[in-house]
Length: 149
Image (cartoon, rainbow, N blue to C red):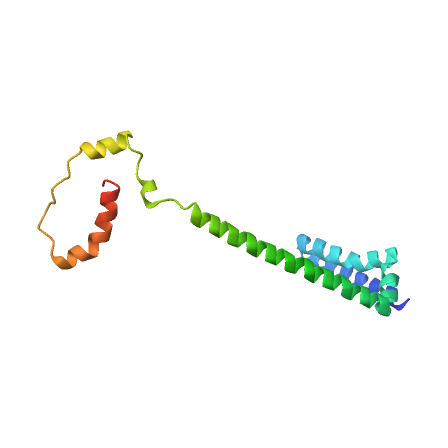
């Protein structure tokens, strides 16, 4: 009886707050507050409050809650282990089927490969580079040469 009274009072207070919020023209927030305020009232009307009160003081009910908690922990543990093993399998498969570095080059006999092969290399323009500059850009030059640029 006390639980029903408390739930009804909480619902009434929530509806009052929603009315004030709606008065301030914040209708979306007011609707959310009404939804939350109706939950305790719905629990009272369905009899769930009585059932919860009788369950809260029952030792057998708490043992049941513990068993359900253990089952949930076991489910989550197996799920985590399964995801971990699938992740490792996917990484291992990616290593075996990795693309070779030469795979980015065009296929032999394609028009782009023929066009590059028939084109003579352009002589370097401007003044010759010093040894310090050559070290800085050697990686970039290798990449550009690989792609025929």
